[in-house]
Length: 395
Ligand code: SF4
Ligand code: SF4
Image 1: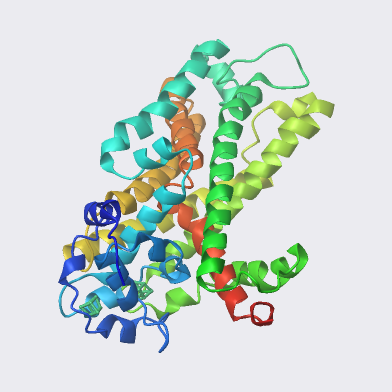
Image 2 (image 1 turned 90 degrees about the vertical axis):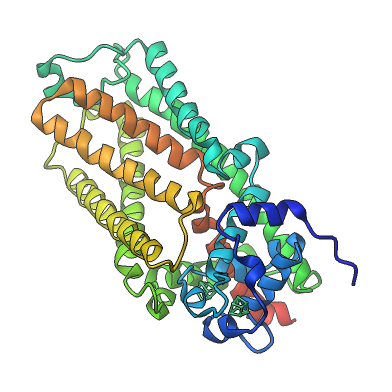
Protein backbone atom coordinates (compact mmCIF):
# COMPACT_ATOMS: atom_id res chain seq x y z
CA UNK A 1 0.00 0.00 0.00
CA UNK A 2 1.33 3.44 -0.97
CA UNK A 3 0.87 5.73 2.04
CA UNK A 4 1.29 9.48 1.63
CA UNK A 5 1.91 10.81 5.15
CA UNK A 6 0.01 13.94 6.09
CA UNK A 7 2.85 16.11 7.34
CA UNK A 8 0.46 18.65 8.80
CA UNK A 9 -0.98 15.90 11.03
CA UNK A 10 2.46 14.82 12.26
CA UNK A 11 3.53 18.43 12.88
CA UNK A 12 0.29 19.18 14.74
CA UNK A 13 0.50 16.04 16.87
CA UNK A 14 4.05 16.88 17.86
CA UNK A 15 3.02 20.39 18.84
CA UNK A 16 -0.06 19.35 20.83
CA UNK A 17 1.27 16.72 23.21
CA UNK A 18 1.80 13.80 20.81
CA UNK A 19 5.56 14.30 20.36
CA UNK A 20 6.29 10.87 21.90
CA UNK A 21 4.54 9.14 19.02
CA UNK A 22 7.67 7.82 17.32
CA UNK A 23 8.71 5.87 20.42
CA UNK A 24 5.91 3.33 19.92
CA UNK A 25 7.24 -0.06 18.85
CA UNK A 26 3.85 -1.79 18.62
CA UNK A 27 4.05 -4.03 21.68
CA UNK A 28 0.22 -3.74 22.16
CA UNK A 29 0.38 -3.34 25.95
CA UNK A 30 -1.89 -0.28 25.62
CA UNK A 31 -4.53 -2.30 23.76
CA UNK A 32 -4.56 -4.89 26.52
CA UNK A 33 -5.14 -2.15 29.09
CA UNK A 34 -7.66 0.04 27.22
CA UNK A 35 -11.31 -0.81 27.95
CA UNK A 36 -12.28 0.27 24.42
CA UNK A 37 -10.06 -2.29 22.75
CA UNK A 38 -11.36 -5.55 21.27
CA UNK A 39 -9.63 -8.44 19.48
CA UNK A 40 -10.69 -7.19 16.08
CA UNK A 41 -10.10 -3.54 16.95
CA UNK A 42 -6.83 -3.13 18.91
CA UNK A 43 -7.24 0.41 20.25
CA UNK A 44 -5.08 2.53 20.64
CA UNK A 45 -2.22 0.51 19.11
CA UNK A 46 -3.79 0.67 15.65
CA UNK A 47 -4.26 4.42 15.92
CA UNK A 48 -0.62 4.78 16.97
CA UNK A 49 0.35 3.19 13.63
CA UNK A 50 -2.02 5.45 11.70
CA UNK A 51 -0.57 8.47 13.50
CA UNK A 52 3.05 7.37 12.92
CA UNK A 53 2.30 6.96 9.22
CA UNK A 54 0.52 10.30 9.08
CA UNK A 55 -2.80 8.72 8.04
CA UNK A 56 -5.01 11.65 8.98
CA UNK A 57 -7.86 10.35 6.87
CA UNK A 58 -8.13 7.13 8.89
CA UNK A 59 -7.95 8.91 12.24
CA UNK A 60 -10.58 11.49 11.39
CA UNK A 61 -13.08 8.71 10.61
CA UNK A 62 -12.35 6.68 13.71
CA UNK A 63 -15.02 6.85 16.45
CA UNK A 64 -12.64 5.28 18.99
CA UNK A 65 -10.49 8.41 18.94
CA UNK A 66 -13.48 10.36 20.29
CA UNK A 67 -14.68 7.60 22.61
CA UNK A 68 -11.32 7.61 24.43
CA UNK A 69 -12.01 9.38 27.72
CA UNK A 70 -8.39 10.29 28.45
CA UNK A 71 -8.08 8.08 31.50
CA UNK A 72 -4.33 7.81 30.92
CA UNK A 73 -4.11 4.11 31.90
CA UNK A 74 -2.48 3.19 28.59
CA UNK A 75 0.10 5.95 29.02
CA UNK A 76 0.95 4.71 32.50
CA UNK A 77 1.55 1.17 31.16
CA UNK A 78 3.43 1.92 27.95
CA UNK A 79 6.94 0.44 28.31
CA UNK A 80 8.39 2.89 25.77
CA UNK A 81 6.97 6.13 27.18
CA UNK A 82 5.08 6.70 23.91
CA UNK A 83 2.15 8.16 25.88
CA UNK A 84 -0.70 6.79 23.72
CA UNK A 85 -3.35 8.56 25.83
CA UNK A 86 -1.68 11.92 25.16
CA UNK A 87 -1.39 11.06 21.45
CA UNK A 88 -5.15 10.34 21.34
CA UNK A 89 -5.77 13.76 22.95
CA UNK A 90 -3.54 15.39 20.31
CA UNK A 91 -5.43 13.58 17.52
CA UNK A 92 -8.72 14.91 18.90
CA UNK A 93 -7.29 18.44 19.00
CA UNK A 94 -6.27 17.99 15.34
CA UNK A 95 -9.78 16.72 14.48
CA UNK A 96 -11.49 19.72 16.13
CA UNK A 97 -9.38 22.05 13.99
CA UNK A 98 -10.01 19.94 10.89
CA UNK A 99 -13.79 19.84 11.36
CA UNK A 100 -13.98 23.46 12.58
CA UNK A 101 -15.42 26.31 10.52
CA UNK A 102 -14.40 29.06 9.77
CA UNK A 103 -10.90 27.65 9.48
CA UNK A 104 -8.94 30.76 10.62
CA UNK A 105 -10.90 30.79 13.88
CA UNK A 106 -10.40 27.05 14.35
CA UNK A 107 -6.65 27.45 13.77
CA UNK A 108 -6.42 30.29 16.29
CA UNK A 109 -7.70 27.90 18.96
CA UNK A 110 -5.08 25.26 18.13
CA UNK A 111 -2.09 26.73 19.97
CA UNK A 112 -0.97 29.28 22.52
CA UNK A 113 0.17 31.54 19.66
CA UNK A 114 -3.49 32.40 19.13
CA UNK A 115 -4.09 33.27 22.80
CA UNK A 116 -3.82 37.09 22.45
CA UNK A 117 -6.46 36.92 19.71
CA UNK A 118 -8.64 34.48 21.63
CA UNK A 119 -8.82 36.87 24.57
CA UNK A 120 -8.60 40.02 22.45
CA UNK A 121 -11.55 39.38 20.09
CA UNK A 122 -14.26 39.07 22.80
CA UNK A 123 -12.65 41.84 24.88
CA UNK A 124 -12.75 44.30 21.98
CA UNK A 125 -16.28 43.30 20.89
CA UNK A 126 -17.72 43.66 24.39
CA UNK A 127 -15.83 46.89 25.02
CA UNK A 128 -17.12 48.36 21.73
CA UNK A 129 -20.66 47.25 22.57
CA UNK A 130 -20.29 48.83 26.00
CA UNK A 131 -19.21 52.09 24.35
CA UNK A 132 -21.95 51.98 21.71
CA UNK A 133 -24.59 51.26 24.35
CA UNK A 134 -23.66 54.46 26.19
CA UNK A 135 -23.89 52.57 29.47
CA UNK A 136 -20.23 52.92 30.43
CA UNK A 137 -20.80 55.04 33.53
CA UNK A 138 -20.24 53.40 36.90
CA UNK A 139 -23.47 53.45 38.98
CA UNK A 140 -23.84 55.05 42.38
CA UNK A 141 -24.00 52.74 45.40
CA UNK A 142 -27.78 53.16 45.53
CA UNK A 143 -28.24 52.31 41.85
CA UNK A 144 -25.90 49.34 42.18
CA UNK A 145 -27.81 48.03 45.20
CA UNK A 146 -31.09 48.36 43.31
CA UNK A 147 -30.18 47.23 39.79
CA UNK A 148 -27.04 45.12 40.21
CA UNK A 149 -25.57 44.53 36.75
CA UNK A 150 -28.86 44.89 34.90
CA UNK A 151 -27.90 48.44 33.84
CA UNK A 152 -24.40 47.45 32.71
CA UNK A 153 -25.23 48.39 29.11
CA UNK A 154 -27.41 51.27 30.32
CA UNK A 155 -31.20 51.44 30.28
CA UNK A 156 -33.86 53.12 28.20
CA UNK A 157 -37.47 54.19 28.63
CA UNK A 158 -38.70 51.39 26.38
CA UNK A 159 -40.20 49.39 29.19
CA UNK A 160 -41.02 46.18 27.29
CA UNK A 161 -37.51 45.25 26.34
CA UNK A 162 -34.53 45.99 28.62
CA UNK A 163 -31.49 47.60 26.97
CA UNK A 164 -29.13 45.36 28.92
CA UNK A 165 -30.83 42.23 27.63
CA UNK A 166 -30.82 43.63 24.11
CA UNK A 167 -27.02 44.06 24.15
CA UNK A 168 -26.29 40.74 25.87
CA UNK A 169 -28.44 38.94 23.31
CA UNK A 170 -26.72 40.91 20.54
CA UNK A 171 -23.30 39.66 21.71
CA UNK A 172 -24.00 36.11 22.87
CA UNK A 173 -26.57 34.83 20.36
CA UNK A 174 -24.38 35.34 17.25
CA UNK A 175 -21.39 33.83 19.14
CA UNK A 176 -23.37 30.75 20.08
CA UNK A 177 -25.06 30.64 16.67
CA UNK A 178 -21.71 30.58 14.86
CA UNK A 179 -20.42 27.88 17.23
CA UNK A 180 -23.50 25.71 16.76
CA UNK A 181 -23.45 26.11 12.97
CA UNK A 182 -19.76 25.17 12.89
CA UNK A 183 -20.41 22.20 15.18
CA UNK A 184 -23.30 21.03 13.00
CA UNK A 185 -21.12 21.16 9.87
CA UNK A 186 -18.28 19.31 11.61
CA UNK A 187 -20.43 16.63 13.22
CA UNK A 188 -22.43 15.82 10.10
CA UNK A 189 -19.20 15.57 8.06
CA UNK A 190 -17.68 13.33 10.71
CA UNK A 191 -20.76 11.09 10.89
CA UNK A 192 -20.77 10.69 7.11
CA UNK A 193 -17.05 9.86 7.10
CA UNK A 194 -17.49 7.29 9.90
CA UNK A 195 -20.40 5.64 8.09
CA UNK A 196 -18.35 5.41 4.93
CA UNK A 197 -15.33 3.98 6.76
CA UNK A 198 -17.49 1.41 8.56
CA UNK A 199 -19.05 0.35 5.23
CA UNK A 200 -22.52 1.43 6.35
CA UNK A 201 -23.42 3.62 3.41
CA UNK A 202 -26.04 1.20 2.18
CA UNK A 203 -27.35 0.34 5.65
CA UNK A 204 -30.86 1.16 6.81
CA UNK A 205 -31.14 4.79 7.90
CA UNK A 206 -33.13 5.16 11.12
CA UNK A 207 -35.73 7.92 11.34
CA UNK A 208 -35.03 10.93 13.58
CA UNK A 209 -37.28 9.42 16.24
CA UNK A 210 -35.52 6.03 16.09
CA UNK A 211 -32.10 7.70 16.20
CA UNK A 212 -33.11 9.70 19.27
CA UNK A 213 -34.59 6.72 21.12
CA UNK A 214 -32.02 4.10 20.19
CA UNK A 215 -28.74 6.00 20.03
CA UNK A 216 -28.79 9.64 21.15
CA UNK A 217 -30.77 9.47 24.39
CA UNK A 218 -28.97 6.29 25.65
CA UNK A 219 -25.67 8.07 24.88
CA UNK A 220 -26.70 11.05 27.03
CA UNK A 221 -27.68 8.72 29.86
CA UNK A 222 -24.40 6.81 29.67
CA UNK A 223 -22.37 10.01 29.63
CA UNK A 224 -24.33 11.42 32.56
CA UNK A 225 -23.74 8.27 34.58
CA UNK A 226 -19.98 8.54 34.05
CA UNK A 227 -19.73 4.75 33.93
CA UNK A 228 -16.53 4.73 31.88
CA UNK A 229 -14.84 7.11 34.31
CA UNK A 230 -15.34 4.51 37.03
CA UNK A 231 -12.98 2.20 35.13
CA UNK A 232 -10.13 4.73 35.22
CA UNK A 233 -7.11 3.50 37.16
CA UNK A 234 -4.54 6.31 37.11
CA UNK A 235 -7.13 9.07 37.41
CA UNK A 236 -9.61 7.29 39.68
CA UNK A 237 -11.02 10.54 41.12
CA UNK A 238 -11.76 12.18 37.77
CA UNK A 239 -15.46 11.54 38.27
CA UNK A 240 -15.32 13.63 41.47
CA UNK A 241 -14.36 16.65 39.39
CA UNK A 242 -16.04 15.97 36.05
CA UNK A 243 -19.51 15.05 37.34
CA UNK A 244 -20.18 18.24 39.37
CA UNK A 245 -18.71 20.26 36.52
CA UNK A 246 -21.02 18.66 33.99
CA UNK A 247 -24.08 18.99 36.26
CA UNK A 248 -23.24 22.63 36.92
CA UNK A 249 -23.15 23.28 33.15
CA UNK A 250 -26.59 21.69 32.78
CA UNK A 251 -27.89 23.67 35.78
CA UNK A 252 -26.51 26.96 34.47
CA UNK A 253 -28.02 26.24 31.05
CA UNK A 254 -31.43 25.80 32.71
CA UNK A 255 -31.01 29.07 34.63
CA UNK A 256 -29.92 30.91 31.45
CA UNK A 257 -32.91 29.59 29.51
CA UNK A 258 -35.24 30.60 32.34
CA UNK A 259 -33.61 34.02 32.48
CA UNK A 260 -34.05 34.48 28.72
CA UNK A 261 -37.69 33.42 28.94
CA UNK A 262 -38.26 35.68 31.95
CA UNK A 263 -36.65 38.76 30.38
CA UNK A 264 -37.45 38.28 26.69
CA UNK A 265 -40.94 36.80 26.88
CA UNK A 266 -42.49 37.42 30.28
CA UNK A 267 -40.68 40.78 30.45
CA UNK A 268 -42.68 41.98 27.43
CA UNK A 269 -45.89 41.44 29.41
CA UNK A 270 -44.60 42.31 32.89
CA UNK A 271 -41.80 44.92 32.49
CA UNK A 272 -41.08 44.72 36.25
CA UNK A 273 -39.39 41.34 35.61
CA UNK A 274 -36.45 43.11 33.97
CA UNK A 275 -34.64 43.78 37.25
CA UNK A 276 -32.03 41.50 38.85
CA UNK A 277 -33.23 38.30 40.48
CA UNK A 278 -33.60 38.72 44.25
CA UNK A 279 -30.92 36.78 46.13
CA UNK A 280 -33.62 34.59 47.65
CA UNK A 281 -35.22 33.69 44.30
CA UNK A 282 -35.07 29.88 43.85
CA UNK A 283 -33.40 30.27 40.44
CA UNK A 284 -30.80 32.62 41.95
CA UNK A 285 -30.09 30.15 44.75
CA UNK A 286 -29.87 27.31 42.20
CA UNK A 287 -27.50 29.39 40.01
CA UNK A 288 -25.23 30.02 43.01
CA UNK A 289 -25.20 26.31 43.90
CA UNK A 290 -24.25 25.53 40.28
CA UNK A 291 -21.49 28.14 40.36
CA UNK A 292 -20.04 26.56 43.52
CA UNK A 293 -20.23 23.08 41.91
CA UNK A 294 -18.46 24.48 38.85
CA UNK A 295 -15.63 25.96 40.94
CA UNK A 296 -15.33 22.72 42.93
CA UNK A 297 -15.28 20.54 39.80
CA UNK A 298 -12.72 22.62 37.97
CA UNK A 299 -10.52 22.83 41.10
CA UNK A 300 -10.46 19.00 41.33
CA UNK A 301 -9.60 18.64 37.62
CA UNK A 302 -6.98 21.40 37.91
CA UNK A 303 -5.24 19.73 40.86
CA UNK A 304 -5.47 16.30 39.13
CA UNK A 305 -3.78 17.69 36.08
CA UNK A 306 -0.98 19.29 38.12
CA UNK A 307 -0.41 16.00 40.01
CA UNK A 308 -0.29 13.94 36.80
CA UNK A 309 2.09 16.36 35.16
CA UNK A 310 4.31 16.36 38.25
CA UNK A 311 4.38 12.55 38.22
CA UNK A 312 5.10 12.70 34.47
CA UNK A 313 1.99 10.66 33.71
CA UNK A 314 0.91 13.26 31.18
CA UNK A 315 2.35 16.42 29.73
CA UNK A 316 1.08 19.99 29.82
CA UNK A 317 -0.71 21.05 26.65
CA UNK A 318 -2.36 24.28 25.63
CA UNK A 319 -5.40 22.27 24.54
CA UNK A 320 -5.99 20.90 28.07
CA UNK A 321 -5.05 24.00 30.02
CA UNK A 322 -6.98 26.48 27.89
CA UNK A 323 -10.27 24.80 28.77
CA UNK A 324 -9.40 24.64 32.47
CA UNK A 325 -8.51 28.36 32.53
CA UNK A 326 -11.57 29.26 30.49
CA UNK A 327 -14.01 27.45 32.81
CA UNK A 328 -12.21 28.69 35.92
CA UNK A 329 -12.44 32.26 34.57
CA UNK A 330 -16.22 31.92 34.05
CA UNK A 331 -16.71 30.52 37.57
CA UNK A 332 -14.39 32.88 39.44
CA UNK A 333 -15.57 36.08 37.70
CA UNK A 334 -19.22 35.01 38.15
CA UNK A 335 -18.84 34.37 41.88
CA UNK A 336 -16.73 37.50 42.42
CA UNK A 337 -19.22 39.70 40.53
CA UNK A 338 -21.92 38.33 42.83
CA UNK A 339 -19.81 38.95 45.94
CA UNK A 340 -19.03 42.54 44.92
CA UNK A 341 -22.73 43.07 44.41
CA UNK A 342 -23.42 41.86 47.96
CA UNK A 343 -20.59 44.02 49.26
CA UNK A 344 -21.85 47.11 47.40
CA UNK A 345 -18.65 47.75 45.39
CA UNK A 346 -19.81 49.01 41.96
CA UNK A 347 -16.45 49.98 40.40
CA UNK A 348 -14.65 46.70 40.94
CA UNK A 349 -17.95 44.84 40.41
CA UNK A 350 -18.40 46.34 36.94
CA UNK A 351 -14.81 45.50 35.94
CA UNK A 352 -15.23 41.90 37.08
CA UNK A 353 -18.62 41.66 35.36
CA UNK A 354 -16.98 42.86 32.13
CA UNK A 355 -14.41 40.04 32.47
CA UNK A 356 -17.25 37.62 33.19
CA UNK A 357 -18.95 38.53 29.92
CA UNK A 358 -15.63 38.15 28.07
CA UNK A 359 -15.07 34.67 29.53
CA UNK A 360 -18.64 33.56 28.69
CA UNK A 361 -18.29 34.80 25.12
CA UNK A 362 -15.01 32.86 24.84
CA UNK A 363 -16.72 29.71 26.06
CA UNK A 364 -19.55 30.09 23.50
CA UNK A 365 -17.55 31.30 20.52
CA UNK A 366 -14.73 28.75 20.74
CA UNK A 367 -16.92 25.78 21.70
CA UNK A 368 -16.33 23.66 18.54
CA UNK A 369 -12.56 24.24 18.33
CA UNK A 370 -11.30 23.79 21.89
CA UNK A 371 -11.35 20.79 24.19
CA UNK A 372 -14.92 21.74 25.12
CA UNK A 373 -15.87 20.33 21.70
CA UNK A 374 -15.61 16.90 23.31
CA UNK A 375 -19.16 17.48 24.63
CA UNK A 376 -20.39 17.34 21.04
CA UNK A 377 -17.89 15.03 19.35
CA UNK A 378 -17.84 12.39 22.10
CA UNK A 379 -21.63 12.31 22.32
CA UNK A 380 -21.79 11.84 18.53
CA UNK A 381 -19.17 9.08 18.68
CA UNK A 382 -21.17 7.35 21.46
CA UNK A 383 -24.29 7.51 19.29
CA UNK A 384 -22.35 6.20 16.27
CA UNK A 385 -20.91 3.37 18.35
CA UNK A 386 -24.43 2.31 19.30
CA UNK A 387 -25.60 2.67 15.71
CA UNK A 388 -22.83 0.52 14.21
CA UNK A 389 -23.61 -2.24 16.72
CA UNK A 390 -27.37 -2.02 16.20
CA UNK A 391 -29.67 -4.11 14.06
CA UNK A 392 -30.25 -1.04 11.85
CA UNK A 393 -26.64 -1.12 10.70
CA UNK A 394 -26.76 -4.87 10.19
CA UNK A 395 -29.84 -4.73 7.96
S1 SF4 B 1 1.95 2.95 22.55
FE1 SF4 B 1 3.31 1.95 23.99
S2 SF4 B 1 2.09 0.26 24.81
FE2 SF4 B 1 1.05 0.94 22.95
S3 SF4 B 1 1.86 -0.36 21.31
FE3 SF4 B 1 3.13 1.50 21.37
S4 SF4 B 1 4.85 1.00 22.68
FE4 SF4 B 1 3.27 -0.54 23.09
S1 SF4 C 1 -6.56 7.07 27.64
FE1 SF4 C 1 -7.84 5.40 28.48
S2 SF4 C 1 -9.58 5.26 27.06
FE2 SF4 C 1 -7.98 6.47 26.04
S3 SF4 C 1 -6.81 5.01 24.84
FE3 SF4 C 1 -5.79 5.15 26.81
S4 SF4 C 1 -6.67 3.52 28.10
FE4 SF4 C 1 -8.01 3.82 26.32
